[in-house]
Image (cartoon, rainbow, N blue to C red; front, side, top):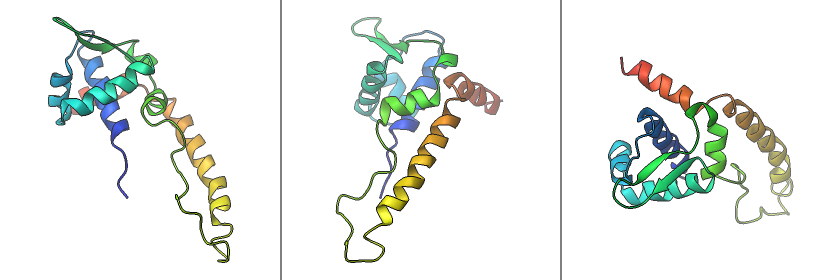
Length: 141
């Protein structure tokens, strides 16, 4: 089963916007950096705008900018903007209740996955887009 790339694309987009220090960027320009279709970028930008992480303006001179400073946007903010809800979702089909594992595995697993999600979000609250940009600048040297 393939995972979603919305989070990594969103972090890339926000880091690029932070790098450009307030210059409005078009979705075509951003897509060139991400190496994806501008439609994908526009979808992610829509989610980020809804979360008030970016501002976009249409028309000549338009584009997208960060809505707040990069050091005020945590990776937890980004995850919640583009991947809301539970990270570990149960399967669509209920396991077989006649099976000794099937009757209780989902309930047992749910206890663990809730803890995993809380731990990950707690850690992500300590990393900002500015931290990612700093790492990008360091690795470019």
